[in-house]
Length: 303
Image 1 (cartoon, rainbow, N blue to C red):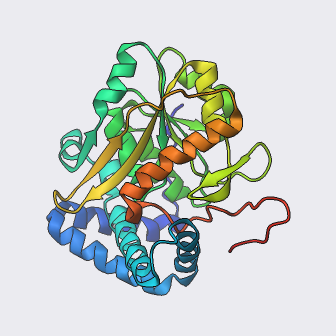
Image 2 (cartoon, rainbow, N blue to C red):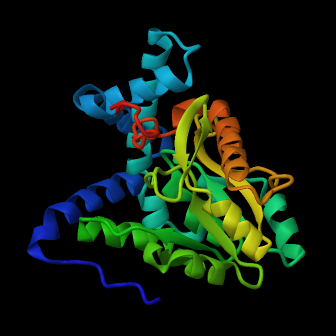
Image 3 (cartoon, rainbow, N blue to C red):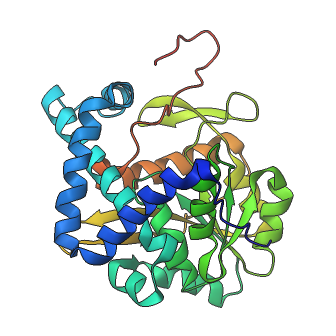
């Protein structure tokens, strides 16, 4: 699929000015200075974005009741800082060279992915929503050919930037309307699919299974794709390492005894794998999403 041309209409000029500012600071400032700048902006985002902050608070109260209000507040504020930092680092996936991506984005567990590829087996990277999730695709595509679904954005400039970043180095975006047939075609012949697994797509076709002890509408599509294609499923998460000051794409070993053939069991197994990664890096996870937007019949809305 040919990449669309970037939008240059007058209405997009303010957006391009912002992109230019972010890119200039990304090129001119050392990583430490960029980090301090973006974390300061994250503090402002935390202060002014009360609705996402409230959503995160509700999610954490339900999912991590062992945290008191003080610890939840610290975690949420750190998440806003990491989100701002990821936005300020978007020039990496948008325009960064291979050399710069290699320096600033490490891939851990690549051997798990390459071992499956060596067997000729397709691979589904089961991805959790984190602040740096869009930084991973071009870096991974430097190692193996990849595909990944995308949803259109309302803003033409944002859509072009994100699809451009996701399509670099041979990464092939798949329109989500292509559906299961498009995903299976991408997996054919040992392909690799980068798939976000924790979104709420409503009651239809979802299974209500536990996620951090709460029933969540979970689409068991990964189990169906794995069964139809014979793909291995590798949990994948992108985090920022504050010590090394670079991103880490963490690929875990393939899920065992998956798929089982039972949609509810497979959906629960997916959620367990996501929980395991999120508990390791809770501040990186997007608690600001309405993770439990769809409730079982008769249950009240949480948000």
